[in-house]
Length: 355
Picture 1 (cartoon, rainbow, N blue to C red):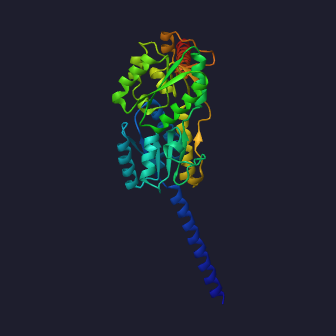
Picture 2: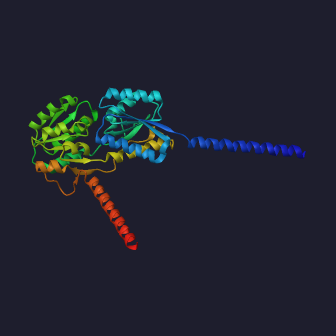
Picture 3: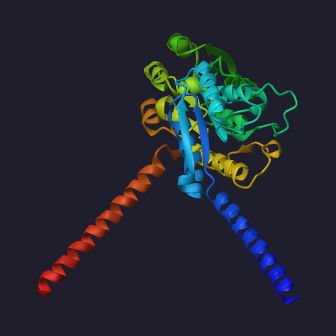
């Protein structure tokens, strides 16, 4: 009888032991899970680059070497976006980042299973042709929006150029979100008494001729957050600056290239916010279909010092010069380096005196 009891105890112990090993093995397996994320970026320019970098940094900070990124750039071609998405689906990536509206549209058409996060997308309802968009896309799509308060951008134009009469609205007709922005700004500007005219171009090939016409017929030009313009700001600047026509822009990168002022977001921070959404989906198991689109927490009035000086534009004190933060950080770094060098010199002098 004692032998039977002892055998039963040993048997139970072995079961519990094996169960413990099984649990530990499952935990170890969970800890070893790796993720592959596909990044489809429409075109290379400062704003989109910053959003992608912020996204990667936020995820890498949490997952380290447990995540790999397949980063692809479509070089401004929406058809290439579709090809990139097809490859991601074939490779079975765990999540797709669609950076800019055409990339999001291609991803939405390419898969209904893989989670898709958009970023640098102005208006999801317009981009995805959603009639009843209420802030949550549903399905396998969510993300972050770079939509700035467009009425406030119109008010900025009025603040800087109250005596102007004709405003030219330059935008790429192939970008649905650009159309949405200029439509909204046009209504706001007309309420302020301006006469507005659309100057649409289909691609970068006809941007120069359209910008030339706009500069000759406008007192001020407004350019929305537009990917084609962002990649070709030099064209607009080379036309508008000699004509002394100021340009108000939808975001910082475009303003740095051809504008006098903007009310803009920080695209790196937008990318970080998108990365945190990705972690909720991949690591925490949050349901993307219930995640509302997130928006930039703050906007900054910025101006381009060089162009403002050349055009004689005076900006109020609450505007920040583009690049001022970077210069401040650079100055701080230089001061720290100088202090360290001085400290090393003093230590060397002390040691020499002691010897």
